[in-house]
Structures are given as structure tokens and as C-alpha cells.
Amino acid sequence: MANLTQIELLHLRNLIATHEVAEQKMNVYASQCQDPQLKQKFQQSAQSAQKVQQQLLSFLG
Image (tube, rainbow, N blue to C red):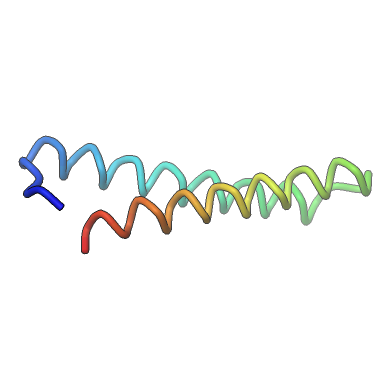
């Protein structure tokens, strides 16, 4: 992996934090949802956000 500039590092950290917040919100929405299909969609979205977050974290080495 090439060295990241300070700006790239800042953007990467911002993306990671954004996906972390998205995951947390989707989990909260899922826990409050009564509709099973919608609950499943929120859970899937949370898992997706977590996966992207982990992929982004891998760039930090």
C-alpha cells in the first residue's frame, strides 16, 4: 500500500466514522422495528456498514 497523505488519512478516518455511525443507527432502528421484513433490512444495512468499515480499516494497516 502506498503511503497516505494527511488529507487522505483524514478522509479515510471520516469514512470509517461515518460507517460506524450508520451501523449503530441501523441497529437501533432494527431493534425498534415491528415489521419483520423492515427489521431484516435494517440488520442487513448494519452488517453492510460494518463490512465496509472493516475494509476501510484495513487500509490503515
